[in-house]
Image 1 (spheres, rainbow over the protein chains, first blue to last red):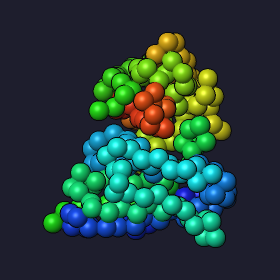
Image 2 (cartoon, rainbow over the protein chains, first blue to last red):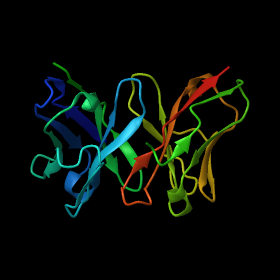
Image 3 (tube, each protein chain N blue to C red):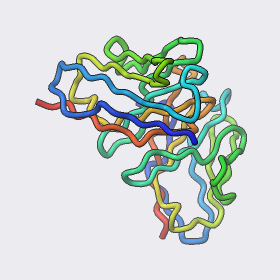
Amino acid sequence: EVQLVESGGGLIQPGGSLRLSCAASGFTVSSNYMSWVRQAPGKGLEWVSVIYSGGSTYYADSVKGRFTISRDNSKNTLYLQMNSLRAEDTAVYYCARFISDFDYWGQGTLVTVSS
Amino acid sequence: SSELTQDPAVSVALGQTVRITCQGDSLRSYYASWYQQKPGQAPVLVIYGKNNRPSGIPDRFSGSSSGNTASLTITGAQAEDEADYYCNSRDSSGNPLVFGGGTKLTVL
């Protein structure tokens, strides 16, 4: 059974850093395209980043230069390193497997950026 | 701002048919996928590709596309279909992935 479990969210001050994790089971992260999608409170879905099986990475303009997506093949885990956090980064962050569409999603982890 | 445009809200009477649309230039080149999201839950894929449903999605859900517009149709809407629906596709400007703003479906 495919499962994605995010962790690492919490309350962080503006300008701070946080690393989100997404532990996968039932499939191999390194053989798939993996993505992060976020949803601000009461707002719609926003694609954040993707890492392809070959290792190429892409980012939304809103996070480019501040966020880094990566994976640990030995732990079958996806990460999102978030630096220079802003109030507008406050959201539930979901990891999702992406083939040509997002077929499996985690339950999400809440990141709140506030002083 | 999103490069896929959806109506913010749509309503349908119980048992009737409703179409939710998504417009964008990238839809001329790529199929849209559709996601259902209920309050407090993660999104769920309901339609992908030309018109494919993942296992467990009722056959009252269908998808279609014409020109720059993709559509999600629910034939015989049920109370449990009340949710937010999002379309997703690639962005013609180069971003690999973009979501529409979402449509809130109310079943009356």
